Image 1 (tube, rainbow, N blue to C red):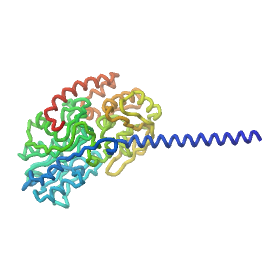
Image 2: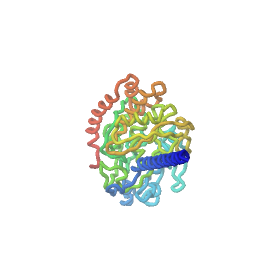
Image 3: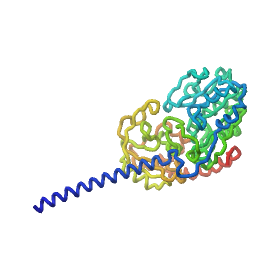
Image 4: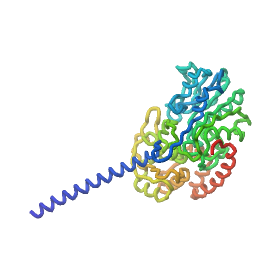
Length: 438
């Protein structure tokens, strides 16, 4: 009888332990989910600033500066006013001007093409204007494309990172405008990851590419309008060209604002940039594309989770947390990348179980994504020297071969970080004369 009671007691005890473990798991999952989404646009935690974009400003002024003009618009799905109206619709219905041509960047005019995907030309059903793709075989408006254009207008939401290709598209369009004597107008928008933060190595001109068109740090701390002034003022256009440039400035924006501290709606600038959280991590965590870890493409959280089949998730998470990167934690996870139409085509380790980590941003004001990623890459090579491998894009993304050479030779990445901090001070001084906001 006593043994039965003891056995019954043990079963109850085991069930209690199981229930407790389930409860703990549920609490951890809830905490993880909350941590990941806590920086999705939600201004309930602080003051919200009323901001009007350049598009809002010209709309309020009844498009007077474009009156009687044939306008070519460089835009995508992010070119919307505060009420969600698209720039092409607004210009068309203004009756002030004619929309004569539309140009779309990477991901296309509607923002539906996967990264690197080809986008074809088409006709806009509302205006009847040609929609020309500027990503693929042609990345610069031709003279023929511009034959019915009096002024070029640029309005695309950027994310403040050098390798995001919209700045390269803007550069090519500025060159085309200068070559054809066409004024170039930028309708300014916020830098979503603040305009007072500069981080990362300067681009070595030998590694100039479409994902690194100018000698700037990876995180350059400028709005797209300020970036245009920098390009023009520092003669970064080909052959010393100068565009007839005008920037329509925002109202109400301050340099120290994160995007979700404004009252502007977040519209994902590209298929894998769903959340502001992603944009915050992106300047550093895009470097994952240059090594053989999955950067989370083909999952619900690209650039916020990463790993590979050869990783031990628990050991890896512990090691990354031991780096004590400010403002972030790492939770062990497993995930399986899959192809997602219009989002991720054949991602790394497609249909393979990957072990890795989820990035949890606990303090975005302290988080330095590029510094953190260099330490992560260094640690990954140390932990998995036989499995770790570089991919061909790493030098273009980093902006030089210094990162690869340093890690392969065992040189501490902290030396690279110290080097770029001095470079960033020089860039801050250089860019100050182009700042349009305090």
